[in-house]
Length: 252
Length: 260
Image (tube, rainbow over all chains, first blue to last red; front, side):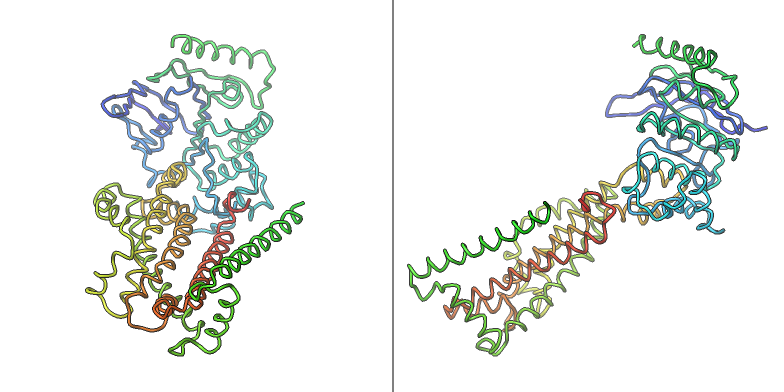
């Protein structure tokens, strides 16, 4: 079986003026179809760059990125990307925002009813005609999730999507995300700097080093969903990952 | 509380107008010059020009209508040229580098300086259109460029991850998100274009137009009618501005700043 995503000694440089900044160094990784993967690393280590490489917004300087055996191309693949920042179109209603992805990715089918179905799935039935400035931050994230899921993506890429939310909303959305994922069975790459979040969500956790990012550790979280945050194994996973990160931060 | 503030604001406005007219009347009395009419004489002149018309028989209404017609024509020309150019300049740095050296200095040439050239090069209605166009063009252009450049990169990335091509991104992300800025460019442009009306109407031999009215009666040293023309220009300008402002608020309710 072809891996959903494969990174083959991927490296990435950015040039800023005369300076060359190495952001990612020799990352090799293979992610199987349907897995929920969390990527954690010290802030500014290149997590977002990694995500942008996976969906074809950026191209690697060296090595290769393969999505189902081919270099990623948003025009051919179908990605569902959820950004940390608010990415809703402020001039469009909730319904129109969810339809936006559908309209671009597919020309046929009943866009309207499919959009409504996914709005209902994220619990926003009745809010179809609201505008982004009229709803809360957590609701905006749900709309973004509905928009991404509605296009039936091959891969879902999430870049610290809940980082700006309050702790309570964050935990609710984490649970809901797991519910949606178990229903749709999609490959999810979830980037976060929040270790608790990573252990709560991920089947596998990729720990990155400080910049230039390499894979520091690959941890399989062998816990049943839903996971209890206060259970001893949960805490020991957390500690393990925190220790890895601690090493990286003190090494600065 | 809010209602109270609004009543207070309205009262203050009326009061300040009353003080203005009072001071004007005082100055007119103390000078008692035939060249500085007081508000009452201006009001009489207003009635005369509105009802009976000027020395050529044109009423204030037809002067106003003609001026508005000319300004709107020039304004439409400015909008259809400045918006596409602004979008291009905002999107493509290369187009910007090519056009900036030409466009930037022209921006600082006052419309009035174009009068001799436009008299030589153009005729009839085109002279008016050109001069209004020169005035209205730059506010629209600069605001369009700024609006396009301010497009949120996250929204562009979002569209890209869905596989949108650059045309779709321009039409569905860049243009709508630049629209509020384009609109305020249009508002300022219309205002500046309207202010160019006197300069534009200085040229033509056509006896109709508010600018023409002012020049005609200035030459006759009948300042009361000149002031009637000035006040009419001011009030129509205010109304045009207000009209677009209302349209902006309606269109861009999604902008929190507008709503507040």
